Image 1: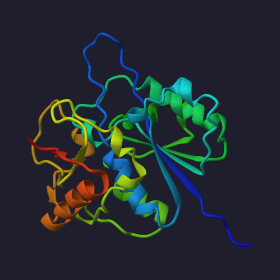
Image 2 (image 1 turned 90 degrees about the vertical axis):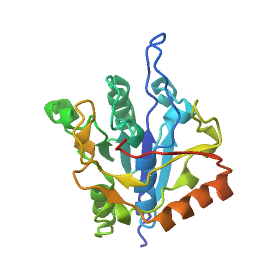
Image 3 (image 1 turned 45 degrees about the vertical axis):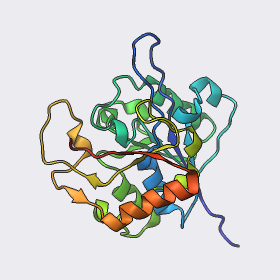
Image 4 (image 1 turned 180 degrees about the vertical axis):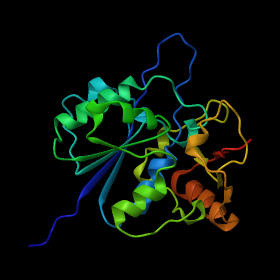
Amino acid sequence: QVKSVRTVTLINPFLDYVEGTGVVNRTFPPLCLGYIAAGIRSKYEVKIIDANAERITNNDWVGRREKADIFIVSSADVDRWQCPTLNIDSVIDLLYLLRNDNSKSVFYLIGPHSSPFYTLPDLSWVKVITGAPEIGLINTLTGEERLKTFEDFPMPAYDLLPMHLYKYEVLGPRFSLVETTRGCPYHCIFCSKVMGQEVYHMRKPSDIVDEVEYLHNSFGVKNIFFFDMEF
């Protein structure tokens, strides 16, 4: 009997902000989830749900009955690692909603809020990944040592993302992030340094050019924010 391919759903949750606070809920592509999806898609049936871009609230999740063998939920993606959001109650609520229909599934939580979850025993069923999660998750889920440093990362799985929804109020629509380096040698007190490394890694210029050309040719992207951790 042939074993069916296991399914993985990666979720970028919609973050409920209090109206009137002036906080902008930007719709940036979740690159971290894109890297992970690209790194494991040869072994799994992979789907990314960008609930933030698609404005899927937790109320909307009720009745969706989303099914997967493995769920990877991000409390905040790479564009918020430096200054993460303060309230992630909606992320915790989403984990419980997903578990209601997936009691036998495996749940991973990634993002800059991960460490405090060790102190919440009622979430002991969630596997918490601290720090930058791509290398650990990709190598663990594939059972292979595919990645060692940022230079080994695959291009994010942009084809699994709703690229038509991303925009930046400074640059406009037809927008994407591109990450060219990872890590930072500095020690700014406001930055969530736990997500980075002291070592500064740079991608090959040719890989960056290929990614920009792919974004433009495949999705009509005209505005790119080269997003790195250091200023």
